[in-house]
Amino acid sequence: MPEYILGLSAYYHDSAAALLRNGVVVAAAHEERFTRRKHDPSFPAKAAAYVLGEAGIGLSEVAAIAFYDKPYLKFERLLETYHGFAPKGLRSFLSAIPVWIKEKLFMKKMLREELAKLGSGAPRILFPEHHLSHAASAFYPSPYEEAAILTIDGVGEWATTTIGVGRGKDISFLRELDFPHSLGLLYSAFTYYCGFKVNSGEYKLMGLAPYGLEGSERVKRYADAIVNELIDLRPDGSMLCNMDYFNYATGLTMCRDGKWEKLFGLPRRAAESELAQEHMDMALAIQQVTEEVVLRLGRTARELSGCRYLTMAGGVALNCVANGKLLREKIFDDIWIQPAAGDAGGALGAALAAWHLWRGQERTPLAPGAMDRMAGSYLGPEFTDKEIARLADRREAPNRHYADFDALCGDVADLIADGKVVGWFQGRMEYGPRALGGRSILGDPRNPEMQKKLNLKIKYREGFRPFAPSVLAEAASDCFILDRPSPYMLLVAPVAEKLRHPLPENYWQLPLFERLYVTRSTLPAITHVDFSARIQTVHAATNPRYHRLISTFNARHGCPVIVNTSFNVRGEPIVCTPEDAYRCFMRTEMDYLVLGNRVFTKDEQPEYADLGNWRDEYELD
Image (cartoon, rainbow, N blue to C red):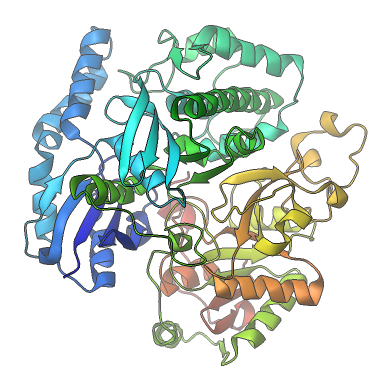
């Protein structure tokens, strides 16, 4: 009989569920995709029901539930922190502790009550530590039999950074950095100070950094202030945070605004207000410091482990710019990063830790031709043509059905080349924060207006935000300075020199949006202001339909690259169902929608009664 283990993450942000069958991942999904509440922290009831349904089992057939952290250890950290900083933090204490005493201290009871709603059965509940869950999510699905493991995030129970090593079925930790000293929380403090939302806007800060004036006196001054005043950075990558400047340990904000304003000579930016060059320079300064810390940690991990390969997880592992620099330093022969590196991935990691460490089971060999054990991260729901047809009937939505998928790819490739924006909904939904061609919005990277159109008319988000390229894996090195796969969009690499255009002499003196709209390469829609791109290599083995579309685009129009952004508007989770996709299509200025083998044309659709105001429905991220 197969043995099932259900992994869960919940009650902080990005709740998720993942299910293993004999150690192989069957399904995994974020709760937000079902509830339509971005970063939903609630118990992942819908995600858990989905993964059980995908396996065709009930809760009674699950051998164990693995929750992604240890609540008692986290409570210990809270109590010791409040005690250590007393009398500071009283308001935060009075807010947090009653919730813990009433609910979270009785986590096992809470979980039992929620699980009972899913069906009968009382599987054993396990609580691996938070950073063990991250480490397990990084190492076990990777292609390596032996590898160093680097996990970096805000904070788990106590740990904020760990260095470990994985060998076969075993994981051991070699070094740990504890709260309140945290690279993740340092980066989040700058996210907050630059006017973005913590635990959501960090990727905006990373995208803003290239607009900073590299080598300028102000960037150097900001970086010096970080490493001389805010943190004490050690040669091994460990760091101590000067808590006189921070408020996250016991307060309700990330930092002490007055002290930061005095240190940097810049007040905290109000959310949604205009971005000044100072904010761009600040984003660049903290990005540079982050990259230096990650490089130092990488060198230490190599020295301590002696391993040729590195695996990574934790929220900071989503900083694809730092990942790209770490790769180019050649400290390791190669790096594998968990595509669901944040807390959602903790659900999978917890289940894997239970299978390999609690059950003592060996790892399954890689399938022939597989790059790793993640199945391309296409682990969410899939919908049949019959289900899509029902949506079309219900909405009285005209569409063209294609019996020949190659014909569909030909027509869609021509639409993209004609400057149209296409919603692309195919196969299983992605696990992790990146759309990888399952739930994507597509455009022509050669079109100099595409970046502006996607940001302002489709996504309704800040105009400075960059877009990622999906490139045929076999053509990646022709377009980018990258010599290996990047299937999960977790590496930034430079655009190939031969594709670049010279910049105007006054380029770096131009205002933000004038800089942004300079045509920098033959692929302007995906070339960031520093000639970089966040790359997804597309492989026929993991996503044959998306690979076929891009291959057709290349054959017909001579370009092996397509713009790929997530299928959602600002503040909305990535779409999950055909209904979600159709709603997003009708609410935006998207031109075409492809649901499986059906193509919907915007100007043929009936008036949509549920337009509403997405700004009221979704909290801005």
